[in-house]
Picture 1: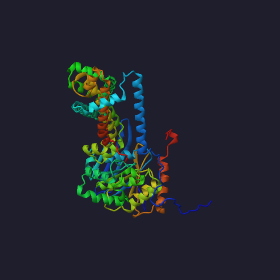
Picture 2: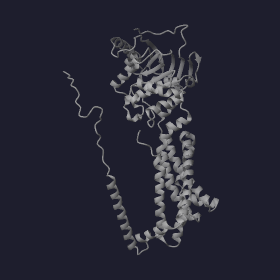
Picture 3: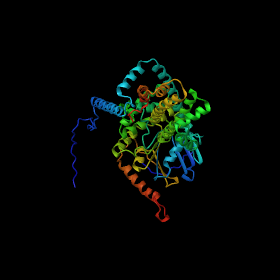
Picture 4: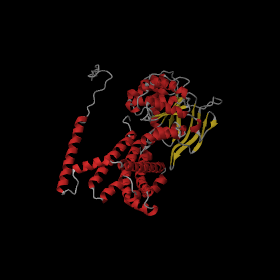
Length: 271
Length: 270
C-alpha cells in the first residue's frame, strides 16, 4: 500500500470526470477556491476536508445542481461545464435518506428509474438486485417511515445504484447512523464492490471510512478549498475495517491533517 | 477494572417489539350514548327556552311537525338541488382559483410579495360587502351572487395553499432535481402529497363558507333555493319552517362534506 501525491499520467485513458481549476461560490462568498480533480471510470474516490470547506458544494456541482463560477468540467474528455446534469447521470446518496415517505420502497426506486430513463422492463430486476445487495429486499413494499435509519439509508443507496448511474455521489451517507450500522453498510459496500461498478465520489469527515472504502482519497484544505494531497489505497477488496495497514495510514493522515486543518490561532481565525 | 459479557436476556419473543401502551378512546357504544345524552339535553334546553319565551321560540314538537312537512313536500328536493348546484359551483371555482393563485405565489416570491397585501385586504372585507358590491355592479342575479362568494373565498384558499407550498420539504426538491424528475412526476410524487393536508383544509373551508354564503345570497338575490325558502318562512313569521329547512340542509351539507373531504385526508403512513 502506498500513500503518494499523484501526477496525471500522460496518454492515460480519459477519465470519466475532469474538474479543472473550478471555483465555486455563492453571492458574496467563495466556497471552493480552486479544485483540480479527476475521477476514472469505476473508481471510488473519497473527498475529505474540514467542515465547511466546500465538499458538499463540489458534489452539487458534479450533480448539476450548481454551476461553477470559473473553471471547466469535462465528461469523458468532452467539455461539459454548464451541462453536467444532462451529460452525467448521477445517483445521489444524501446525508439523510430523502426517500418519499408516502411511496413504498419499490415505488421510490421505480420513480427514480423512470426519470433516469431506465427501460420499464428492467425495473423489477434492478430493484430486486440492488435491494437484495443492500439486504433490504424484504422491505420492498414497506413505507420508508416503517424502516430503521440504517434500512432507509440502504434503500437510498439502492436507489442511487438502480438508476444506472455514471457516477454515484455520496454526501456523508453514514454520518447520521450509529457506528455499528454504519460499519455494517460500509462492509457491504466494500465487499460487493466490483470492477464494473459505477464511479463513486464519496464525501466524508471520517478518515478511516475514506481509507477503507476508497481507491483514492483526495484531501482538501480549509475553505475556500483546494486539493492539498491525493492518496491511493491499493489494498485488495474485501478489506478489513481494522486492518493494521489502514490504522497506520490513518495515523499518518491524521498527523498531516492536524497540521493542515488546524485553526491558525495566531491569525485570529475563529472556529 | 473488568468487563463481563453476558448473553442478553429477552422478555419478548424474537422479532417482536414491546407492546406500546396507548390511551384508549371510548368504544363506539359509549360514544353513541354520549351523543344521545347530549342531543336529549339540547332538546330539553330548547323546550325550556321555548316555554320561557312564551312560544316566540317554536317548541320541539312544532319543529318536528314542520320538519315532517318540509321533508314530505315536493319543493325541498327542487330547492335543495338548486342550492347544491350553486354550492358545488362556488366551491369548485373558489378552490380552483385559490389553488392556482396559491401555487403560483408559493413558488414565485415577487408574486407572493405583490399578492400578500391584496389577500390580507381580501380576507378582511366582510362577505356581505362582496355580495352587495356584486349586486350593484352585475345586478341581482344568480351569477352576481356566485361571483361575489367565489371572490370572497379565493383569498382564504390561496393563503392556505401558499403556506403549504412555502413550508414544503425543500430537501425533497433537491432530491427530485438530482434524479431529474420531470414536472409531472415532481408534482405528483413530491408536491401533491405535501399539499394534501392543505388542500383538504382548503376544500373543507371553501365548502363550509360556500354553503353558508350561498344560502345568504339566495335570501337576497334569488326566488329559488333553500335560502329563498328560509327567507319566505321568515316573511310569513314561521320560525319552525326556517329551523326545519336549516336543519335538513345542515345534515345534507355535513354528509357532502364528509364524502368530499374524507378521501383527501392524508394517510398516517408517513
